[in-house]
Amino acid sequence: DGGITQSPKYLFRKEGQNVTLSCEQNLNHDAMYWYRQDPGQGLRLIYYSQIVNDFQKGDIAEGYSVSREKKESFPLTVTSAQKNPTAFYLCASSSPATSGSNEQYFGPGTRLTVT
Amino acid sequence: SQQGEEDPQALSIQEGENATMNCSYKTSINNLQWYRQNSGRGLVHLILIRSNEREKHSGRLRVTLDTSKKSSSLLITASRAADTASYFCATAGANAGGTSYGKLTFGQGTILTVHP
Image 1 (cartoon, helix red, strand yellow):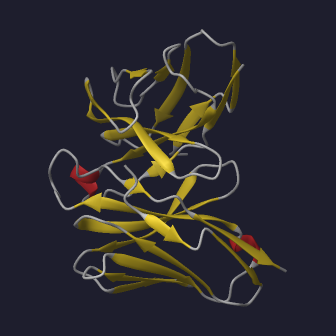
Image 2 (cartoon, rainbow over the protein chains, first blue to last red):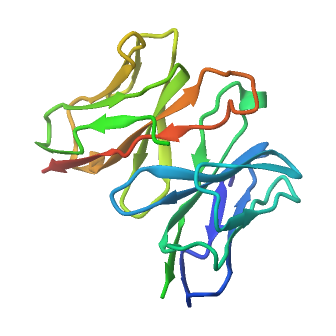
Image 3 (cartoon, rainbow over the protein chains, first blue to last red):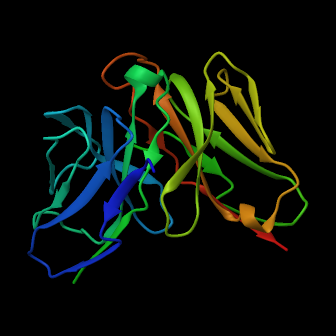
């Protein structure tokens, strides 16, 4: 059953703590993305990775970090430097180089609440 | 920065009616895509239209693209209560094949409510 998974679905943390959100895909996609969505808003790109061991900052990278050690995995760490971390986080993947299409496949999201 | 601007922000219709959502963007694109999001869930890809295409159909969906006006519309015909969701347009920059090819810029979405 191919797809992209995110865990956990809900996450609660105290202010000042770092937290890591998981994203795994078994679609053999080269590219992976992290987005943040605030209530009633569109998606804003945090980080993306086109290939293993390489990633680039998106539009709102401050206070976040990522790694891409394996093709299947792209974890996102929300650090204590992120001023307003409470949001819905979405991970996506695509394979534009091999499929010729940059259609993105999304995970179910993680809702992070920091108090 | 948000490239896509969607209109209307919210749309409420009766089952069986058609729903039209519009998207405008600012810079040249390689393609434009529409996605659907049910409340609290991930996005699902609906349809992609390339910059050299003017109209595309998929089931009850019809998408148009006017590159001279930098705008697109999504028409859902004979709507159903199950179509209730948020709909987002997303644009891919014109640098096709470059490192930014996979990146999409999303609009803020239209919330569609279809009443049974």
